[in-house]
Image (tube, rainbow, N blue to C red):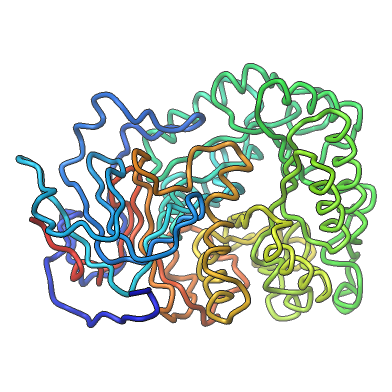
Length: 496
């Protein structure tokens, strides 16, 4: 029975036992725990004494499992023991046979729901260190958990930026204490992200950086960027390129065209992105390096990505939901909450990005979660900072495309799991036997209205507030531990 074939009735059940001092009726919650073995950089050490902290095992019954890494899309039962996937089968009845002495087994009735690999967001801004008024590790990773993301990448444009080993090391220590999901750190390509001298890339990689980027800026000096690609190619990780020619975009606020004219502000031409996409692809071809193109937003950029892939280059690309859901006219309604970089594009580009996520040109959907304090976004369009949040809206926006028949469920899940994990070389995005149990329970048919005031993020800068969407994340597990669940999930769980 598939997820669309059965709608379970609401049932009374056990009170939520996961968070002391709260009742299930109190609404969505995040478990207040410190993931002892979850660290930045190279991720989790799945062995050792940390295995002893798992007081419960889980058996997920009757859910519609979608796992693109194994080409699975059908009803499956999944057994999780001590934080790892132990068995995946059409049926694991009778459930009592899997209970081990001295350990509790939590049986989840997932009929009518989807069970998915934990989602991976390879482009987020946690604003730590130095900008905690915008977001914190706690609020940002709770937002990730609420959005179904079990693994995220944190960009280095912080204060100070992550361009030195001591900054990376200090950030990793904070992440180990404060994060509720896995956070991998992206380090800067150049010192201070100023584009003048390379950061100590080898040392940063050895300390655990999974990729390098000057995100927020391009590396203008082609010779320096080529040197970075040659070095990073030897280090075995990708460079994430923010493609923007500042000579073309300088002073720009929104997309060049009618909307910019109506606001009386300078526009940003599509060519500002496209010339750097072309340059960086040529340099990737020259060096053999792995190049990942962040937030690709124009039809011409995507055409170049297709050509690069056809030529066999190690080029991957991501798209942000706002670039395939909204066009530049959204700025007329949402003002600074629809101001981001690259800007919202004309309708022809929006359609091109949507087609690219359908046909495989785009490897991953990434939120480009960029939180700002409400006072900052309350400024005029010209003065407000670029960026919108997305950790808690990305999944329902994709699910709505599935509900509308624009995108298949398997492709949507691939864009959030196998695609981004492969682009960054991460061992995530799979429900295979023996893998860490990073899982999401999703009601893909539940309709709700996005409410930024209910977000776990500190920020509210979203152009999707008030939008009706489908696809509610009901529970998120990281290494077998529940880090997020909606209150009504308690009625679907039984301990034996």
